[in-house]
Image 1 (cartoon, rainbow, N blue to C red):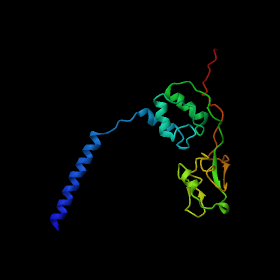
Image 2 (image 1 turned 90 degrees about the vertical axis):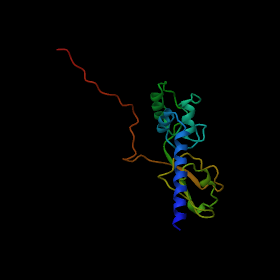
Image 3 (image 1 turned 30 degrees about the horizontal axis):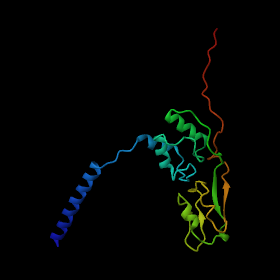
Image 4 (image 1 turned 180 degrees about the horizontal axis):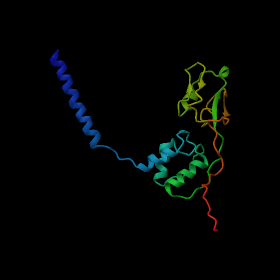
Length: 183
């Protein structure tokens, strides 16, 4: 019995060492600019920019294949942050900027088809097959991808009204400088 345990432990040590060596030897270096761009993007994974998620869009921006103004959830503020990071001119948003919204399921009408669950890129919809579904509002990014596949049209988008903790100043902020008067 002790021999079997020692053989298993020895095998685990050898395999662990081989995996450790492989992780160092075959490490793929990523572009640090992609990580900075991705940190600015809203992480909605909605595909409204024409890419399947925020990381592929960030990679395309870093490689110069995509414009910085194609993310509606990020809005004009996101475009300004990307322009600042990349040293480019601020461009107008290439889509209509909409207020934040969240999906709401009219639960008595839900037939439990799971098409909305499959369409949600952030797993904000919970439920099971042939059971009522609901939306975890804190996780919903408002991408609207769940609305179209619903066969009974029981999903609607509702605006998220500003509250004291979600209110944002909509006007530019200018730094005040003191002016000395000549005496």
